[in-house]
Amino acid sequence: MMGGAISFIRRLNMAAGVALVIFLLTALYLNIILSIALAGTETGEFCPDCPDWTDLDGWLAKRDAYEKAQLNGGQQNGPASNPSTASAKVGDEMKGYPVPELLTAATASRNGMVILDVRPPKDYQGGHIPGARNLYWKDLQKDGRLDLGYAGRALQKAGVNDSDRLLIYGGSDEGPFYAFWALCYLGLENVSLLDGGLEAAMLAGAKLDTYAPAFPESNYTIHTRPWLLVTEDNLDSFLNLSDLEVLDARDFVDYGKSKLSNAAIPLSPDKLYEDSKIKDAAFLEELLNRRGLNKEGTQLVYGTPQAYSLFYSLKLTGYNATLLEGDWWKETRWAVSEIK
Image 1 (cartoon, one colour):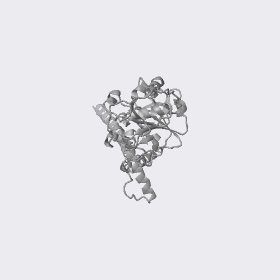
Image 2: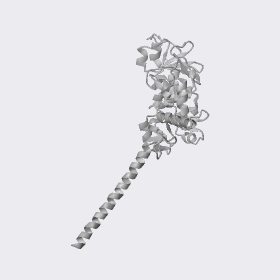
Image 3: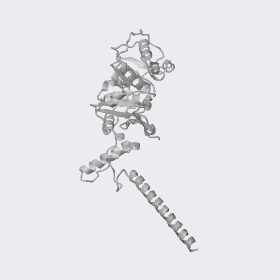
Image 4: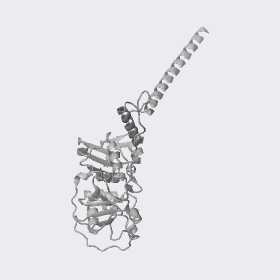
């Protein structure tokens, strides 16, 4: 009888010990989670070295306020300015962009420019800017990627020559941005986008035409700029550059699943555009500066199709961007997967 009681007491002690261990481990786990939620400090204060990638702009604004408070002796003088409140463009004037020739206002004169409508032929035939030629952006591709043979033939049929001043416009899809990158890579040096596309032109008073202008085919010959395209053959060389900055244009969910190297910075283009129009120069400069980008370095943009519009915004703002087309990078040794 006595032995049974002792055995029972021992079992109670063991159960109590296990319960205590579980309690302590749970408390430790909750403390870790709470510490993360409190931005990485033991007191719950803001941590200036712990980026919140789920809300990077919000975190950057808080960091600005924190740094300003430190300069003022620890006293915060109101919240830091938010880039989303930056002043909008005055009318459609292209003021302040470091490379303003890459953007044409809907109200600007289009005289002397070869206008390329990159929408599908059916949309083009239903009404286009007077004098515009149709160069459907998907005619530059084969199997979803730029093809030199297809692109060269499409440019010849559109009568495009090296000396032309080209103005690209389209709808609300990635077509105009894709065409901009593709034409730059294919060696054309005088390419501009119509700010806001066809809708902005119509709001500015453009009357649409259904007449397709006649023009001679060109003898355009492809002469690529290899540094504007990251391929399977040169990816290693790019990623070994000491001044390279890698930008992921996909949404944060995709970025959280996998990315191209641990150094990749998420920057989805929806922060740069509003109603198909690019935001003003001051906003772009502040947004990109906040991410510590260096105009003396090289920016590798990936995550198509979103990467095309990010590439364009970087070029407009004076950065040395290059682009990786497709998702083949996921099969390389540089891919970092967060899913185990």
